[in-house]
Length: 90
Image 1 (spheres, rainbow, N blue to C red):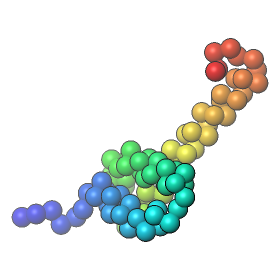
Image 2: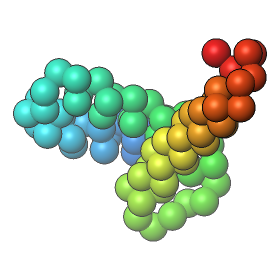
Image 3: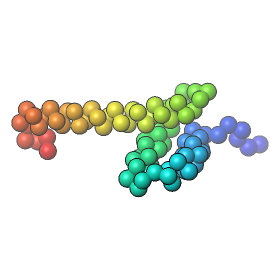
Image 4: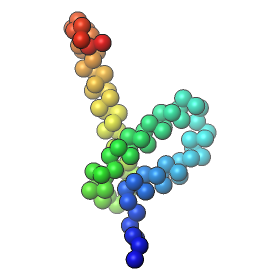
């Protein structure tokens, strides 16, 4: 008997496919950013599957936000180090 519940990896791939027309309408530089967002969502499929949320796209968005928040935090720390004159921050 086959699997009846799709994996989180399959759900993310399906959502990405659903957004293909939107992606095609974007400018090239925006497509790159959208692709990075979906890559971020794929990076967190294991925790997302563990949650088993009834609306998987909400979890996908949260995974995207998590990666963006990590990036902002890393940049914030780097700017603080540069402002403090830390020569290893570059």
